[in-house]
Image (cartoon, rainbow, N blue to C red; front, side, top):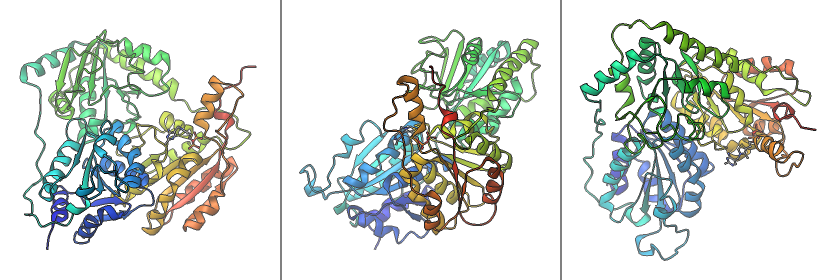
Length: 545
Ligand SMILES: Cc1ncc(C[n+]2csc(CCOP(=O)(O)OP(=O)(O)O)c2C)c(N)n1
């Protein structure tokens, strides 16, 4: 007999949700039991709620639908919080379902009880605690709407265990297309006039272009008007990094000369980006509160438009539709000034994009590994990254070309890489998935790679082992030179560990063995694991004597 949990799950199913990530718990046994009756929903069992949560975040990013994660109360819910934070910072639709103590015990400090409305209040878009079994279907429907609309983000549904297997009328909450939004004709005409007149325009494009058709719309707009494109923080995969109009990402390591050049623009089209902390270089580019150039900010969330920088045109709309509306059928002639401007920005970008020539005598320079992966990666490869300094050469030098994907957390959280790789390969079984992770981040969620063995997912895991939390060590050397504390790592034998998980594993200790290892790692079935003994010294700032 279908019950309240069936009602909840059938709303998810009606919205195309075909996978959930979970660590089981007694507090949501009723929902777990209902899952048994949904063979079309793949239940991925994880080993830690952070891993389950990161998988849901990655899945949400890849599908545009909310990634779903189910966890137990108290301990499970606290473990999952890192993913809620990541979904919020990364603007990814995600729904966390938490089993709750029975209603009769609410607010009595019952076993493993937490008031999730307070706990998640500031990091989730919406936290809803059900009080009646009839609410579950409607709550699921609204959770999907909230998670996917405006700035996408995390929603938490809290379901007391006594509500999970009640008789309810089955739902009629059907999937609904989001409303289409486009600026009015007069505004569009004025924007077209501005586009034609600008001499030094610059597009700054962000995550909203991840949706199907977004990359194409962005490219068509830039090409039609010959406008250089900078991408917002860690959104390298939205526009070909090898396109003549690509002028870089606004991230953590832009040279001053590049930002100074961007400042010379006379029109900024900030499309589909929140223009937050890192993209705006700590709220310093463009000028606060009113940019020096004409500033167009288009984003689907009213709250975000002009939140930091006062726009001349603040447009609450779908940036993809706007890009389409601003793309003329033909190509207006680009002025000499505009061509020279795009060329100047490109030159600055290229000077910065040159591969480092560094001498490493305490291990392999991980940049060499990245370069080798880049040369051999498929045209549709999905590259999943954990947080750490090993990843810097990927951001600076990989040169993503759509449909290649970069799956890296904007929140900078460690532990994301391995679960993201699992979720990516599950979502796209036919695509090449390459995961790069540091020895620090790997020890946080690397256990999730057992799913790759269980499900025979052909992921290539590359572990950068420098026996250090190097990103923090770098900061120590910069701010407190020579006073190393808490950043050295004593590690297990990773090669043996991967073998014990059931993987083909190899350790690489010499630069001349990198290419062969990666080549064989990218071939064959099932997951493969390469541990690279990497140089710490090449990543550290030079000591001032
Ligand atoms: C969950 C989490 N904890 C702590 C940090 C702070 N942090 C950022 S990078 C880093 C070190 C990463 O070390 P590792 O994975 O070995 O990569 P490496 O920097 O050595 O290349 C730390 C501790 C973080 N970003 N996320």
